[in-house]
Amino acid sequence: MQKILEFVQHHWLLWLFFAVCLVAIVIYELMRNMGGATKLNPQAAISFINEKDATIIDLRDASAYSKGHVINAISMPLKELDKHMAKLTKMKTKPILLYCDNGQQSNGIGAKLRKQEFTDVCIIAGGIHSWQRDKFPLAIGSKTSKKTGN
Image (tube, rainbow, N blue to C red; front, side, top):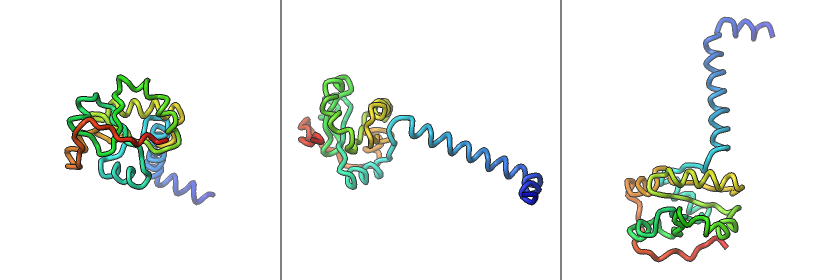
């Protein structure tokens, strides 16, 4: 024990740095778990979709959806989301991937779903804009996928 105290006395700056890093990691993990949905870049989102057979939900309005959406995405415009809550509630334990234009709205909805005990909710960080920037394919048209998570 004496040697540990002596080491700390001689290397207090190192121990201070260690303590600050430890506190930062704990705070980050608490905020991540208490906050909204997990943010995924487009490549990670594709892995999430493929590995977990995630339900993809487009929160943009119908006209934006028809101009281009992630393949197999279900259109649930943010303004109409309350009408779809019964359908969403059936998916509480299933993986869900949300996206909007830039990630701001989907993050808020992700947080709301997490508070309602949805277990596996992720969002595309940067929304459809980051998806397009990374040149991933889009489906065109207003035909909504039949996949509802039932």
